[in-house]
Length: 631
Image (cartoon, rainbow, N blue to C red; front, side):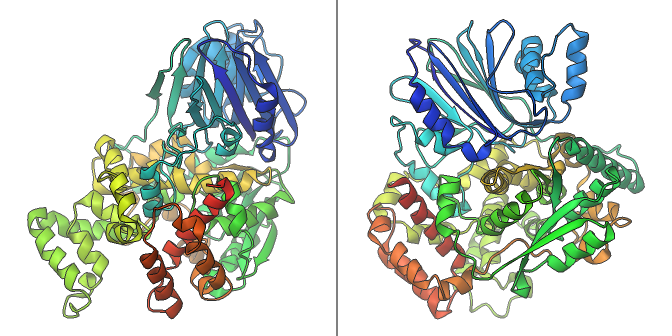
């Protein structure tokens, strides 16, 4: 895995500040501590930090084409590069390395921008065409690898693997985008393609970007999307289960190519256990696995991981994380560069730290929940959807809106309707209801959190518009596919993949995600929904497919997640920090927050009247961001 960055002048070909590009490159040293390189020419500087995985002896970057016309910097792994290499050789291309980097470079020369559609893997890369004086950026289909960019006020265009590389540029506009603050306190992250900064953007997954000479315009094109049209000719259930096993095995096998030690995360959940089972089937050597154990039973899945490790005779490493392991609180802000509130980043950091002691590459089970419909919220949303389908919104909104307002007095209601959240969900349309189920702070509580002046700066914008934007463009034929699609466009890339990329790269560890192989995603996406959610069983087909290979207790136990005891921390060792940070000058001087309501959130939690740990953590991480960026 690697880090890339660049400074381009597409108007005047002015000299690029080489000490500056080196500073930007060095800020990503953790992504590639093995080698580094810088290419410069009039109007352009490209830089690269390399974590050597394949073709250790060559494949250095930036890589220049034989005629010096194209220069490439690339972050990622291309798993089908050997097949593409053979195809290109048959067309007369001569290779000087055995790297996947050179395959992209020659592929560009033969296929042009269509090269991205031929790549199977995770990638973010930039190609500079010195003859045409134009820049081409590309990001993989699911957004496994990150890519940030910005136009500067002096006409230069800059990009990088992490936001921190752009932040090293003294002319970067660091003004906050108000809509991003609204989005952050709803989702706990800032959805693509926005960032916390008004003038900085993420290249969206499955997109390419062109910037041409003498132009300040950016041309973006989507080259891939999740295909959600149901395929009714998939065969019987036995055929589907067999195909799922075969496709996961294939996705795992192509990710076992490396010239460095390789292993896997093993949490004891269905997804990582399935990956390890396939690794054991694909390679006769014992799989190196690692997992995190917690000293609090409610958060500990180590027993289930041990069951899988023993079944497949893996070389298993376990590290116990103390329940008071909150030493990373401040470090997370430096790791993620913008506000990020998934507290499972702490154990993720620790498991990456453990894995790097034994391996340089690790396979994970990330993406299984989005791909196979594993989240509990999918089940509850579909139950609610059944009610919504039987009662028009014009009736539901006043009836359930009233019930929500009188809760908790409605003890007479059937159990499914007792929760205030359920009343509120029934009073909304399907997309607004799903937003309500995934948001950390709902519309009402965000409105209470923010100062009136800040709310006016939003001009009526609300975070649910992110989901509505994607829903309007979703090729979905049913509601389950719709909410899976929404998660793939938001939560998967903005939260899950961001978490894993930054936590792993902090340790120079490459993480590969076979359950997000695009060929597997395309097959599963087109399956009829009963293979994903059947009755109350999520991941139906995945679990059935692995019944011969995994213990029943692993497949059908209740999902625990990768959590930390926030509620206890805030009532104990983090209590003083919570009050001093959230009510301190740094937070209040932003003008974003209503001080009285911040005080209320803290008091409710400390008294035990309400568990406000999620919004409090979100606020604490926002304060850590402000401190890190000195805003």
